[in-house]
Image 1: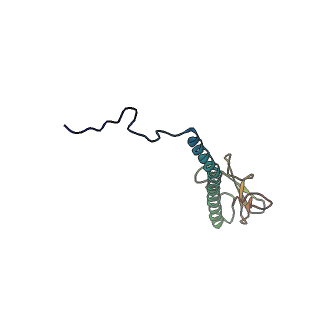
Image 2: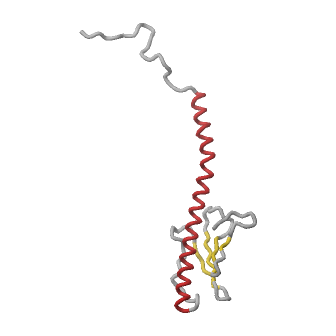
Length: 139
């Protein structure tokens, strides 16, 4: 018959700790909270920047279509195939033909992209808002 080791009366198989104390759990919760408070603002800025990149792509596509149309007819009027949304669909793009023969493209959204104003691009290459006067750089 094989020998089986039995603990002596009053002793268990495990003499060590069998769980976490409340203090240890609270320390872990505090550490996770600190990490989250640092990481969340960075994540938010990253998401806003990626949204603005979608606006830039949409504006550049629309400008490209307008310029191709201009090379064919020497006028921006009558360009009907200008995209009305950004590639990912986050922005609505509108075209305003200026009386001086140019255009202003505007990308607007209801989502939080970190910009207080709509993002615009003109036929002269002017990009607004440009980060001057204490505003965030949206380009």
